[in-house]
Image 1 (cartoon, rainbow, N blue to C red):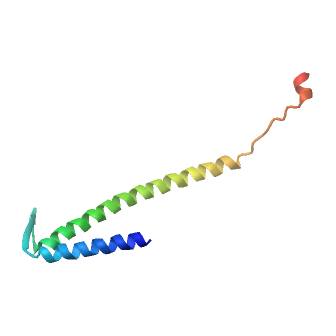
Image 2: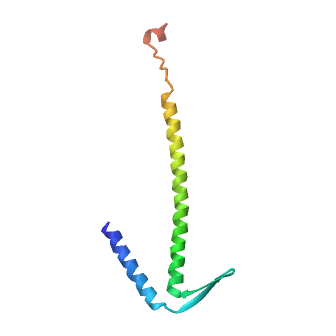
Image 3: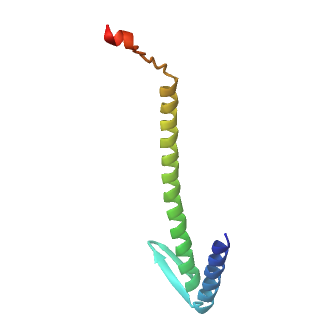
Length: 96
């Protein structure tokens, strides 16, 4: 837990230093959209967007795995409720 806090603080400090050193205004064009903002805002915004897309992809995988697990557990419950008939073979029946 302390390690994550430490890493978060380091990433935060590096982000602030990066933002303070990259204040030049740049224009980004995508199709018909034009956005003028400081370079740090553009780069950090792109990083946040990438993280969000990655988390969305991971979320879809987690949901898929959860649905598969639910299906398997449901099938297991059905199998467990089917009565099993054990045939007990005694020594007398085998020798006869």
